[in-house]
Length: 240
Image 1 (cartoon, rainbow, N blue to C red):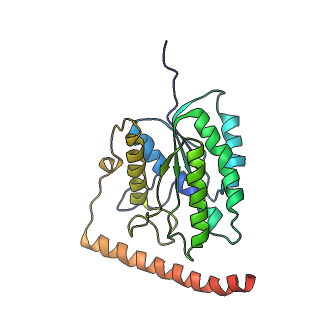
Image 2 (cartoon, one colour):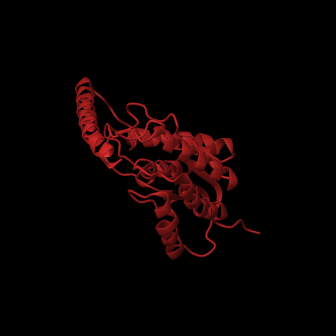
């Protein structure tokens, strides 16, 4: 009997999974999940959207999947990255966040051979997201991943200078590749066949002038973020 055809990599989540943005040394900024699909030699289907929270994924993205996907369609790998837009505003509700993760991970577990869920970096955003909210979100992600049989891509320590933009939220082009490399490590340890490493697919050259220009641009943007953070503090205090 022929093996049922699977449709590659399926992704839900926020702008980090949706991808897109500035070039870095001429390298296009593509989603970590897309790079993961390329590393596995598989097609890619993306339902992620910019600014999405967990509830948006559970509601709008699952509805879009149901409307556009043949009944019974199966995938090799399901990817989920969500939470940065949940933990940064005041009033994060860990219980509601966890409840929103459940139907997403349940669908991925039903439709995918393997599922990969991402934790959040501990240093997130400017002004920084509350540490308690990040830890609570990561606890929910980890516990729900375990319940639904998902693999975990641990990004708690993610955040090197050239891997995250000055806003300390969005990965750079190289950061997305690093995330994909880590994702492929997790999948390979679970028995998935990695066909090519994403870092081998990009080619770039740097010069002293380009590096200096990049450093100056980064410092300028960090200063802008710092000023925005200072301006936001009185507003937060006034809001209680």
